[in-house]
Image 1 (tube, one colour):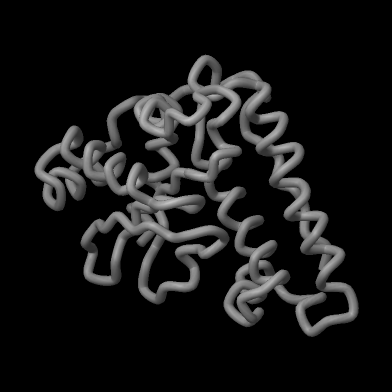
Image 2: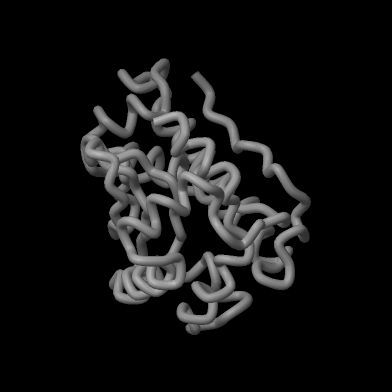
Length: 196
């Protein structure tokens, strides 16, 4: 099974000024594509050659194949949950859950951003829906993915590896996180919540 780089649902410059075309050129066309290419090369003649990406992540030992497969999945989730037409505020059911579990939307964003700021080094910050219908914010480091945690349904992720923001924001992760909310696809998140 050959893994493919997923097509972006927007033009390369569509997220400007919050995420530049130059950042996407490097982040999507170079970093993400390299993970896909590496994975395809690594799985040839292995037990992972003909299984799904999710199965590889769950079965591969924590080394090269796991790292590349997890990064393919993480990056695909990140890029496909961004939009140039962000509605800025979550849709009905998502907003109800946020208000219930974080008090209000502003408190949620502040909590998420703090978690992402303090996610030491490289990694990912996730909003997940637990088996008991509660929202939770979780950090993972390096290539680790939310798929390794049982009973956690990912709704949103923010890539806090430096390559996600260094061209646009240099070392200002805080500024990147402030602007991240301008490109979040809340409609896609709502569809995940409604299909729990």
